[in-house]
Length: 283
Image (cartoon, rainbow, N blue to C red):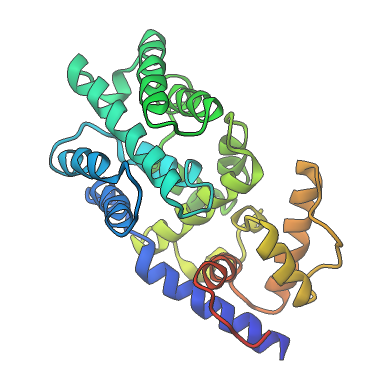
C-alpha cells in the first residue's frame, strides 16, 4: 500500500511538471511573467489592476535576465502561490526593469553603486504597496550582487556542472549561502532547475535519482513533513530547527525513496501539489 501511495504522489508531481515547468529557452521570462499575470487576474486584490498594467508592459518590452526572473520566482514565492507574493514578485521585476531602461543598462553590466540605487527604488515600491518586508529587499539586492557582480551565477553553467559531475551539492550550496534563501528555498531552486533541464532535454531524467546529493531537490515544509511521516519515510516528531538537522532529514527521506525506486524530485513536487490543490489520495 505504501509503495502505491508513493507512486500516486509521484504521478501528481508529473502533472505539476507538465503544467507549471517551462523549458530553459528564450521564452522563459515571458512565461514566468505571464504566470504571475494570470494569477493576478483571478485575485480580488485591490492592487491588482495597476500591477496587471505594469506586467503587461513587461511582457512586451523588458531587459530582464531570465536566470534572475526564474530565481526570483522561487525565492519570493517561497513555495507559496499567494497573491501578496505574486505582487512582490511583479513589483520587483517592474522596478528592476524600470531602472535598467532608465539607465540604459543590461543586468550583467550592473555595478555596486547601481545596487544602492536599485535598493532605494525597491523600498519605494514596497512602501507604496505595503509589501513585506525589508528582508526581501536585502535578499533581492544580495541576489543581484551574486548573479551579476561577484559569482556571475548562470543556470546554463549549473546545467554543465550537473552533467559533468553528476552532483547537485555545489549549486545547492551556492544558493543556500545567499541571504534570504536558506535550505528550503535553495532546494526549491535546485529541484526546479533539474525539472527545467529535463524539459529542455539538457538533463537525462533516468540519471537524476543517482545524482550525488539528490536530497538537495527535496524542500520540506510542515505538510511535506507530516505526509512523509505518515508514509513512514522518517520517524521525527517535529521539523528540525537547525539547518544541519533539516538537511539530515532530507537525506533520510530521499534515501528511502531511492530504495523504493521512487523519483525524489517528482515525489517532492507531487507532495506539495496535492496539498495546495486539496487532492485526496490513498493516505
